[in-house]
Image 1: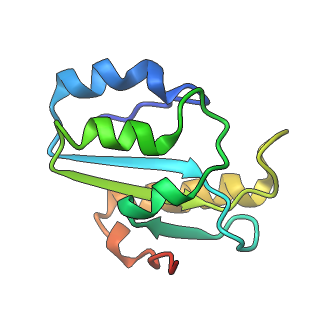
Image 2 (image 1 turned 120 degrees about the vertical axis):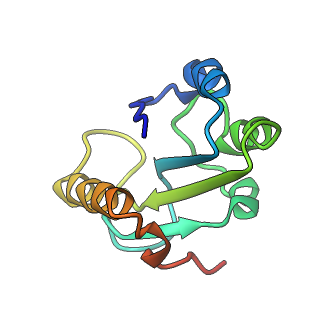
Length: 116
C-alpha cells in the first residue's frame, strides 16, 4: 500500500498515481455531507459530481473521471468537516485515524454508505 498526502492539491499527484497503476485507489477527503463534524461515509463515485464544495484546484469529480481510465476500483471516503476553511478540528483528525484503521484492516466497506 502506498500512501500519498496530497493536501489541498491532489491534482499534483495524478501522474504518480497513474504511473504506479494501482488496482484500487482510496481517496480520503473532507466532504460537506450535512452530517456532524467528524462523521465518516463511503461516498459513491457517481455522487461526487453533485458535490460542488471543494478546497482543491480542480473538482474531485474531474480527478475521479480522469482516474477511471486507469484504475478499476475507486473508493471515496468522506469526512464531514466543521467548515471548509481554517484549521482541521480534533473530530476530523480523530476520524482520519479511524479511517486509516479501517483501511489497514481492509474493513473500509464497513463504513456507512452516504445516502443521497
